[in-house]
Length: 473
Image (cartoon, rainbow, N blue to C red; front, top):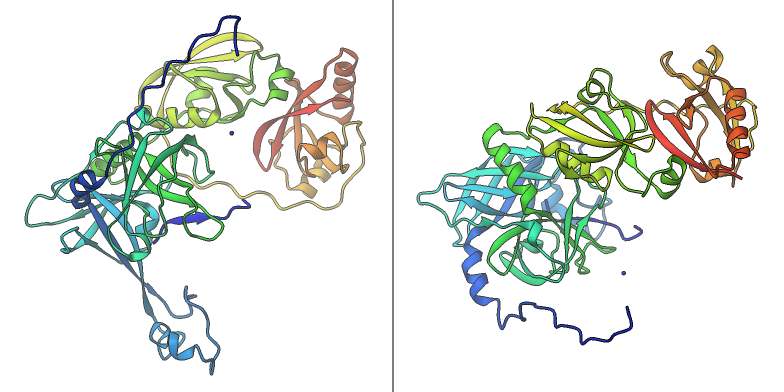
């Protein structure tokens, strides 16, 4: 398929003066022609074919019978609306091994029945899928050629700096090999496409059809795989995103060896440390990954990691936020025993755990929204109820869940500001378990009297635990 896009609804010190030293930077190239000539043979155009079955919705418009447009779409729709028909999609890839291994985006070849690859010299070859990874949107293909193919080389994406020149080569709108130039606009972008988002942002024009194409640096090395664009219209507005080459290299290596990706898993659910949470927990800064839940009998549980711990380093690597911890843990060798640095009630603690392989299990569905609220009003904008058999039945809460259940939320209250909903279960307040609304109220009253400004609640929401910082008064 083509380049995916998502809608736009959605940057004097001291008393002495010194002349600023000029920044060292590579000058604007006179031309990209020599580099483009060198790299174009490594980039391929990809076409995929998929059969739409009877009654399956076509991506083409549904034209009413007798419409003036009926003849225009007749060749696409066929004489019958409900007969199988073929749909072709276009994308880009690049050769990474002379034997015929080609990298592209997973969404380019997803659900494809046939994949054909056109080389820069016009040769068209049939490709087979070696493996794919939905979480990083990468796929590896293989073609058989009569002679070794020109291959691109991976660069070190960690060395790509904001402002560096880059060029993109791809197949926009099916036009064929097209070269565009720009700079690295930003690094480490999280666009909420997956758990391992770490995109390079570029203003090199990329469009639908560029998906899976390479982003090259001025040394001719691949620093990214063009994958997404931010656009209100579907066309390039100068905000494109590329998967960094260091991640691509690792994923491709596993796809080549195993046909799938094997990721590390430690058995925790984590969330960001906000300023309010840091204040409420007495942390030195809003950094690290807050442990909201620990899987029973998982590696973290066996290592003694608890709810409320803040992980600051994993296997010697700093953890500034949950996203970085997810990537570090996933990249860790399965079976390796690592050290984990964390803060527990203000004290530094180090534990050791053994990383196991992540099982790609599906997420559990959220419980149905409850209806009839009960009344146990608290000053934070929450109506609470004991978690008795009636409440469990009404809100479909299993027996293992303990705490007090939220039955109503007052609009424009502190609880509403933190998106509390009926059916949420408050498990603890400041790491102290609560079993009744009176327990909850007593704990909050004591903290208000003690001068606390932020209350840290552990909340079970749809079966998942999360910490919520609620500002008092």
